[in-house]
Image (cartoon, rainbow, N blue to C red):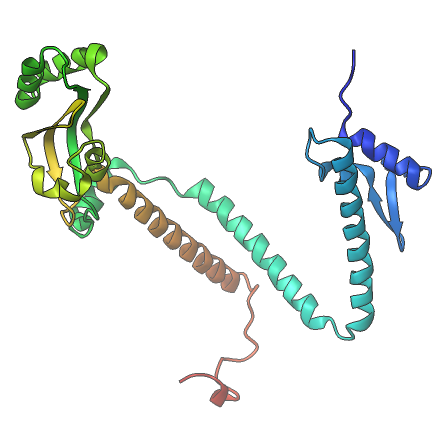
Amino acid sequence: MITKPTPYLFLTLMCLSIASCRQSANGLHPLVEVNGKLLYSVDVEHAIPFGINKSDSMQIAQKYVKEWATNVLLYQKALENIKDSRAIDSMVEAYRRSLIINQYEQQMLQERVQSPSNAELTTAYQNNGQKLKADRDMVEGVYIKVPINAPYLDDLRAWMRRGDTKSMDAIYKYSKKYATQYQYFGNEWVNLSDIARYMPLGSANAENSWEKNKTIEVHDRSHWYLVHVFNLLPAGSILPFELAKESLRNLLIVKKETEFLQHLREELYTTGIQQGKIIYHEPLGAKNSKNFPK
């Protein structure tokens, strides 16, 4: 059986061509050494995408090794020429503290903050739902496209105009046999323009032609296009609960997380004072009060 060469094989050949690979104490094969810093073949292997040919693998490996060696030398050169690195050390430490704090806060949020309940969402909608408005025309209904000479067109038109459950079932069965396109969106809001673009009518005139409980029928040389509108939500209207729910959920989560983190910090500070971990050696403003805002 022929085995496809892997990037690791190319790296092994590269390693052997540069120098005899010695095995380090940790069992890895060092590929390059620069001023005591070692780059291992496994590190270069991870930088090579799987499945590329030998020539490309070698080019990527050589480029990676060159950049690594250059960065080692550049870093050491910078250390030799930056006389005072205390500001950098301070920034590094501040960044490290920030990362650790953020990681801890995210862990606490995942453990302690629960997703809003339906009752909370309902209350939020009752209190703030009027502020959430549709930014585009939306519609609930059913759409069907059939060939211009499709059979039983009069029945189809009658079903579409009635728009009741029995008629919707008949339209669905009809679509299986004769429809070129069919979409039922009677229980979900969709952008009116997404439906209108299917039709010769075009989305530009859609808002002037569509009304609640109205059936639209248009045709071109090859097809009939029919839409029955159950409900219409014009742009600027207050969002119904089912559409506002996700926005409310996100707002409540942000609110809960903000309040939790504020409480966590206040509790840590209060506990620190009570346990003597926070010690004020003199009251703020008692000395050099001009340095404190009044």
